[in-house]
Length: 65
Picture (cartoon, rainbow, N blue to C red):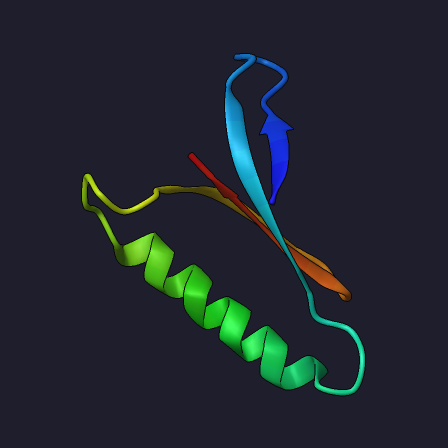
C-alpha cells in the first residue's frame, strides 16, 4: 500500500499497486481486474470504497479511501 494525495483537494487515499509483469502476467492481470470490478460494484459502509484506478502495461493501481 502507498499513500496517495489528490492535489486539488489535498485528500489522502490508499493506493494498492499490483504488478502484472513477468511469467504469470495474464493470470495476475485477470485477478486484479476482477478485484477492480468487484470494488466498483460494492457499496457498503464496512467495505473500502474504490476512488479511481490506473492501468498500464506493467501495473494496475487501485486508489481507495
